Image (cartoon, rainbow, N blue to C red; front, side, top):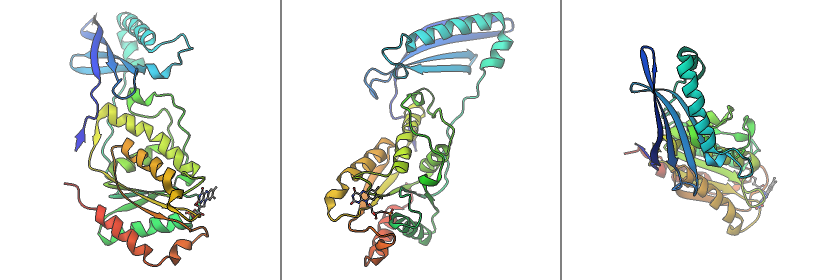
Length: 298
Ligand SMILES: Cc1cc2nc3c(=O)[nH]c(=O)nc-3n(C[C@H](O)[C@H](O)[C@H](O)COP(=O)(O)O)c2cc1C
């Protein structure tokens, strides 16, 4: 089910009718208040309509600009309205060639029922073994599964430009697109991570931060509900306190994407590369947990 998570308060602040020969265009400037999401965030949308169809869109929001820079979202969007009006009046065909854009929808890609993000750089380490058991559990139920291994992928770090709140997509075109598609399509997401200095390793943190674009997509275009998340983690030291930060980080990540954290398996005192295999009953525990939550969506 797709639901809209936050409807911004949208006001039409300017509307220009342009007669360009046979075609009539309407150029609208909207002020959209995203304060319910981020206090003070205002998005401006300039939309050119031809009849019922949007043929060009420009968006910008106040979080893109430093207060020290004498540019502001409002000024830029008003300038865009003026420029676009001039261009359409002078050369409508040229305007269409330069600005016409296909508005892309984000499809719900049903890639795998179970998606596991395996956060350890060790491809044959403890988290990798946990991930393998989770895949086996899905297959035993006749469900599909895939493991995402961020350390092998091309992922840039989030630069906090906030442009994803204009479009629902990131400015970077790298492997994050396929990771977000996989998360979008999963009914169960398992985040499987070693504890590194009390939190997640760098590669997994890149994924977590870049998923802000998926959060933005859900705000802008709506998103699924009913997805579930599990946290699997291993630590070298003894004691539950070693997981205090990592469980908070991963649960916050899941909630940010509308995914309900439904359980965790936290294993301390595992350091050597295959220690996890020496723990009696662990494979069974992992499989039971995965199967319990890999049920069909209603
Ligand atoms: C850079 C680094 C930082 C670590 N920090 C912690 C830590 O803060 N607490 C802890 O209990 N274990 C820590 N460990 C140990 C790992 O969590 C442990 O070896 C784990 O089993 C590795 O999982 P893997 O086999 O899936 O890579 C650290 C290991 C590394 C390499």
